[in-house]
Image (cartoon, rainbow, N blue to C red; front, side):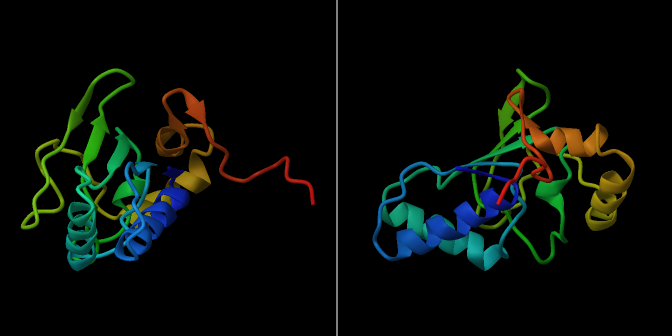
Length: 151
C-alpha cells in the first residue's frame, strides 16, 4: 500500500519481491505516478501472472488528481488495474492491455503539460484544486509536508 511517491515505491518493491519469488498478493496504490515504461509494465504483469496474482495491482486514481499523469505517455506507462473515481462514490475499473497500457476506457483527462501543472498547483492552490484531489482519498487527507515531525 502506498500513496503518491509511496505508491511508486511500493510498485517498484512489488516487482522486486515478485521476481525474487516472494509472494506479493495485493498491491494497492493511491495517486501514484507511473514508475516505468511499457517494458516495465509488461514485466510487472508477467511477474504477477507467475504468482497467479490478477490484477497485478489496484491503482486508485481520483478525478482531478494530476500526479498520476505526470510525465509523458511516450516515456511512462502505468501498471494495471486502474480504478478511476469520478467522485467519492462513482468509480470505473479501466481497461488495460499489453498493447495499450494507458487505457482510454475511463476517459481520464490528462493535463497538456503535467509537470508544469503540478508546479502551478503547488504554488497557487495548496489548499484546494488539484493538490486537494491528490492529497484526499476516501475522505482521508495526507499531508504534503510533515509539519509535526520532531527529530
